[in-house]
Length: 505
Ligand code: NAI
Ligand code: MG
Image 1 (cartoon, rainbow, N blue to C red):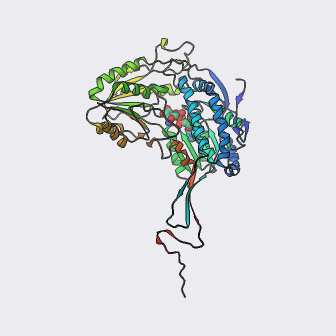
Image 2 (image 1 turned 90 degrees about the vertical axis):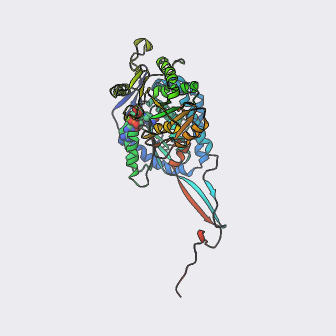
Image 3 (image 1 turned 135 degrees about the vertical axis):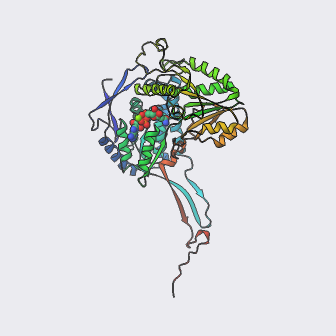
């Protein structure tokens, strides 16, 4: 830990212009994991400059040629899954199977992007005119700014960068300030793969560093995953500049609907996973359980029992279900929402916000520990605690009476629209939900967490701005050209439009 880790700009490790450093902290122990150079707008300026310069050469190469670098990254992710999974767990606190899954998901994204390089790109399209060939072709856009959160510190960066690079863009990345060690490793992988200088750049730092990327005129594309507050600010700023584009993936106030036709084993299992995996710190985590009155009492008893018992502990241990929260400020936020819910008059069923001393693993007293908080609320009451994203194990049971239309009405009674699930054995209920729930990601008889890279990943309403991640990020990082070539010596137009040049006399 003697060294201060640096930025990666133009193929070099550099200290940059800043004099400040910051530390990465293990959220389960409070111990320092390393010291990192803190970026400044001047560092971003350097990184964008070299990325802009490298773009002309990078875009000239074939997609297949560019993808070769990513295959090296892919193999490294595969070979080092165990080791990197442990680092993810140490730095962001999610339990070890989730730490490893983060690395595996990164490998899948890189595999998808690199494999896609040998697949057809664009489309051949018919023309009305037999002598015309028409195509939809993709072009890269230039420097892509990537701003990522801490909760998937290996996977999300690759969700942004793998496809962007294969498509011929260059990258300036600002990782989350909570997980700079994971970011360091991601940058080392691009360096190991021999990615040409300037094509991939990383500037460590905080929100001001991210903002400098967004503000730079030489960055036509910004990919952001994180809070709705920051994401909408970025989308608004970028939307006002012609030619610029931001793809923003934000949070949710996600729900699981449990109807009177639910299999309650599936319902309880799905609800526990949706609410408490990653200690509720997934953008798709569920903070609302919408339960039909006919099954409410039984569901409540079983869910409360599970919430009272889920194992909170050392995330490196295989028998831990929930690790700590990411940082002290976040523990404070989750606690404030517990207090707010109580002030709003909800019926509290489980409150493990402050764990007993014997629930905290030995040697982990400085971790940011929290257990489940579960309460009942009226679905028609206008409460902040059931409307605002807490990003923790904070769950409302909302009892409803009536048909599936009523359940979906409650599901949709939120500004957000990211993820949701329905548990039911009745296909008509499931299909109604599928067609009417306002969501980007929806699941039947499953938890509302989990994503695979070959599907689009993104929300509607306040949760997204129309450019989903994973596979679909290609729409954000490329422009489409409608390209028509005439094979005849004559000019002929579609729609019967005359091509005659008519002159007087
Ligand atoms: P955040 O949105 O502040 O940070 C995400 C990334 O954006 C980080 O790299 C951060 O440095 C950067 N950033 C912050 N301010 C910026 C600005 N003005 N311009 C450009 N980049 C900026 O999220 P944070 O602080 O980690 O968490 C706050 C809340 O956001 C959480 O409590 C949760 O509700 C939500 N969140 C949602 C996530 C998701 O998966 N959708 C992930 C992380 C947080
Ligand atoms: Mg923030």
